[in-house]
Length: 478
Image (tube, rainbow, N blue to C red; front, side, top):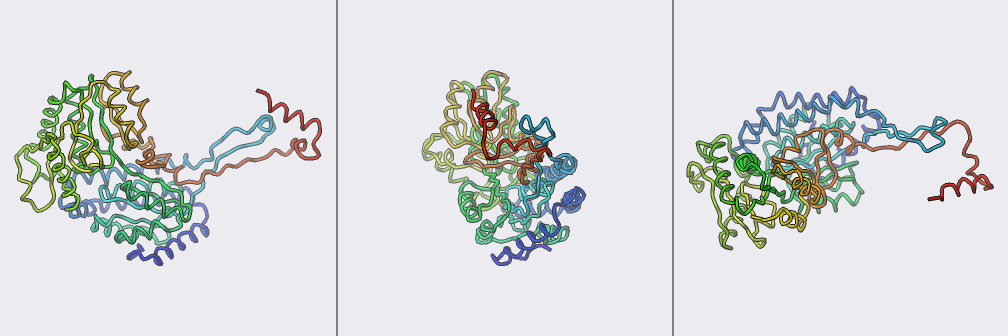
């Protein structure tokens, strides 16, 4: 059963039980790992609608179709991919033994062992996906897990706790719900690995807490993921794809395009194309549109509006994209129209913080080097997006910037490729998962060397003689 609450003593007791079960039962078989994966798949298939409804209530309004796609189908896809491939992932990896011992039968292998118990701190923006997608790698690698979901999506967290408690024993999966105090206590536990998805500002605290037990970390953070539109970009297509990424989940995505570089001569054309893209996706308007998601709560709604107010006060052109001229001051929830801020300055809050909402600043530029220099002068982002058909410019951008990942001629989609690792770099995160990289992230890669039977190494043991000295001398040559 799942944990009812999350006091430090309770959580420590659950962790001790899971660690004891891991030692008692030994390395899980292929069949056991597939069973764990199958149970999560069944949970999501059977209870997907209930989870979608819980997410809708937590957000005030969240598109049920979007949730079904991003959280339910997306998670099932990751779990099925792991199920399909875990047998091959589990096989020891052959490495080369040193010459001449390899000629006499010496072997070098890497064995993939479960780490034991993996802690997962999942966020509110995709509360189901970012709980169950890590489980694909965790279960495939043969681990047990404890989960701390977000208190911001309380109904979803409580439902996941209930459902996971029905599908798994407490020794396999435990869910600890609660507020920041529970999260702080959870991050201090002596896990064998800890996954945190959330804000960079919180990651500092998680990393400090994990350091007390030297717990290895996977940090999936965010940052300001830039878009660079080249002169050769198809402006209409680019605007459609950028605005689709910026309005999905109302922009509350760690990989959402945070700001865009647009050629100086195309600034107005891009704004017009972006406006048409939003009008096409939401022809009946936004406020009462079931396809458009709310900002999660009042605090974030106020934060986003403060960015707009700050930009206006500092002289920026702020353009609201509101196809039906909806009155967003009169609504039961926190829906917010997409906005474009033209040529913001760096002293504006919108250019300092990760936006995490439907606001897109656009900066005009002359040469690609200007955009690259700007990106490189700021913390390394989780994603970077290039639009264009100029191969040399594309390669220049990709080769001269560092980001967690990149998508060419679209946004966000690199995260949807199960055979590509997903992760950040520096302030946008560390470590990566998805597919085989998730399996390896949550496995201990144990080096195993098997020595030959013949005692050819007697020469390297004392007493040292001329044969030994010749061996060493041969290794000292250029």
